[in-house]
Amino acid sequence: MSHFKKSRIKILGYILGLSIYSLCISAYAQKQNESQNPPNIVFILADDLGYSDVGYMKQRKDILTPNIDALAQQGMVFTNAYASCPVCSPTRASLITGKYPATLKITCHIPGAGMETYISKLNKGQKLKEAFFLDHLPTEEVTIAEALKTKGYATGFIGKWHLAGEGSIYTKDGIVNAAYHPDKQGFDVNIGGCAYGQPKSYFSPYGNGTIKDGPIGEYLTDRLGEEAIKFIENNKDHPFFLDFSTYAVHTPLQVPEEELKKINGNKYFALISKLDQNVGKVISKLKELDLIKNTIVIFYSDNGGVWGNPPLRGDKGSLYEGGIRVPLIVSWPEYYQPGSTCDTAVSTVDFFPTLLELANISSKNYPQLEGKSLIPLLEQKKNFPERDLYWHFPHHRENTPLCMSAAIRSGDWKLIEEFETKNIYLFNLKKDVAEQNNLSATYPEKAKMLLEKLHKWQNKVGAEMPQPNI
Image (cartoon, rainbow, N blue to C red; front, side, top):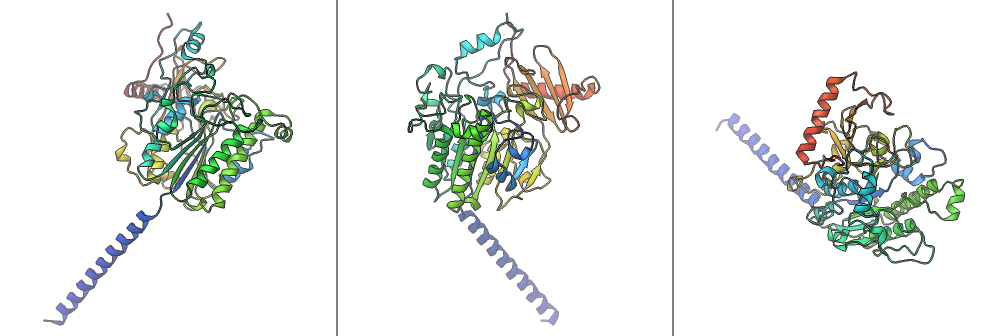
């Protein structure tokens, strides 16, 4: 055999050996990766907290949110984050199912006063009637809690649910139909979650059948914070998903007197301060138990604020930005760049696929999902798909402009169609975040194109439409 052939055989043998070695190393690394626990997930959902109602936005004087601000410094702040509805129940249903409210047919908050009373009041004197909507989340809907349990997660729900029947104010304990509570939707623990859309009282006794009363005068936000900590402690040795859905900062404006003194007598700011303290309490517990390195923390709100949302126009219930753009922080400094920002528009429907990817669960098993995983954005990659976002709110709301409307956001453009008047509003949000200049007459082709896309989407999801009020 020639020297050339011998050398060639040696080289080929070396390459083969190196390839086998590389495959073994790769397989070992993959096995090691699979053997590691997936991250813990803490999702903090505030109620009615506006876009400007956090200190890091620097829009309101006297707001005290040092813990939320610290979380922002340790995570990614999303400046164009949206709730999928301008009121609470639809956003909450959307979050845990990964579907748009119009798809779920839960497009309005479930009325504590009862469907008949609420609808007859809102329809009075209107050209169009309220569109049909469900008063609960059907149990056949697959939730993110159920999906995460397939990966061995412990699941806990602490706080406001508001997806379990209408007429809660007529109950003594907020329970209309316990068959629709969180523990029937994949959560191992449910503390506080019932049909209530707001607390009967922020002070014990709470009048809530899913949380035991504490000592007289105990404060609800503090109590729920303690329950969140307890859940973390009880599940520290395996992956957990904590949905900490605070009742704060929804009315009634009830706060401890000592807290009120710190905020110059502003009850709403004091509610925010108590929320912030309990966000800090949860983060401190994660650090104390050495869980923070393997825990992703998400802070979000279910709709726009009630008390103004500068520099945005509109409030809760409106499809102006102030009704739907909300604070969003995602923090996992071990993996995602602390102190970063993202200007890409994202929505409630994106959380389900994001949490699936974090838990290494294939989204192919959940074809019903309507959002996109946010992981590429968190990793600051440029492969996040361009897509449009939609809102469908066929409901009246007293003293609220641009309710009873639908909307689409496409890039920098946003179009709103008002159902009763058929008026069209077109805004370029990059140039006019306060939505002062309706450009529908200036760019009629753009308006026509977006309106067609909006109608096509409504038809696709079977959106319920308002009917003539005869």
